[in-house]
Image (cartoon, rainbow, N blue to C red; front, side, top):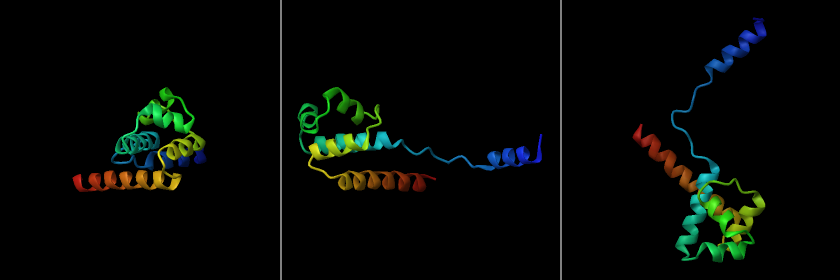
Length: 106
């Protein structure tokens, strides 16, 4: 094994694994979209229609099964009378709460 390959292998082996797996962005975004929809008392069909996406696709986004584009996120957020900033802040707060819970549990 060359010296460079040995250094690369050694560096790779030293990268620590995170203690706790962070959730996927699509899961957190989907959960926040669903939460906002339910808080507003809106149906999937209503929000999908206002957003210009299918009910099936919106359902999959809410369940974290699809990775929506920024255009879809903007449309769905708008269908919920939210801005992308509103959605991003909600997601950031949820991630912060989850991270704080992990730190407290450790």
